[in-house]
Image (cartoon, rainbow, N blue to C red):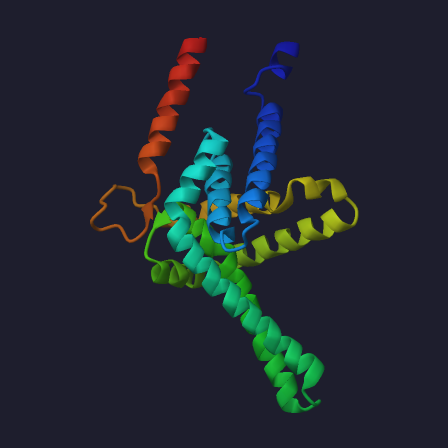
Length: 236
């Protein structure tokens, strides 16, 4: 019994190990997001790691984070700036019609329209950086896929947004200790549902010329898997 308890392959220890990785990723995300303009690349790198954790693919957390950060910097930054600007514009529109516009039926309609648009923006934001982390695509295609998937997989989308809201609520009320894991904890839980969605788009046969959604760093993941197997054989 004790041998099983202290076995590092024990589900409890594996979960604790994942929480440690989530903590490390959150620290890296904060540091790399400080310049603000780099937040997109940082978020993409965070999801690259958490998606692997959710798939039970062990690897080198710090190395994987910076590998993704570097490889995705240009496209992730462009996506981040697009979403930042559109998000600020939508927020201003809602604020304007709530605080400044005179009460009228048009005001009510416009508030409803912009709130709906904010929901769509939030749904797309939930998908766009994980998509950038997982698949090769131009910026325009990645943004389109985030819209397409968020609508097509609405139950997953609502589920992720609900979980995100619940984690935020618990962090500021009943369980403030969750805040040490920050946004990486949100990404970690989202990654389980995202992997479920992404698996539907993973090609069964690797045909790069025909693949519209090509997995990122497939060679690196295979190399890390082989390294892990070699380490386990040496331990035995």
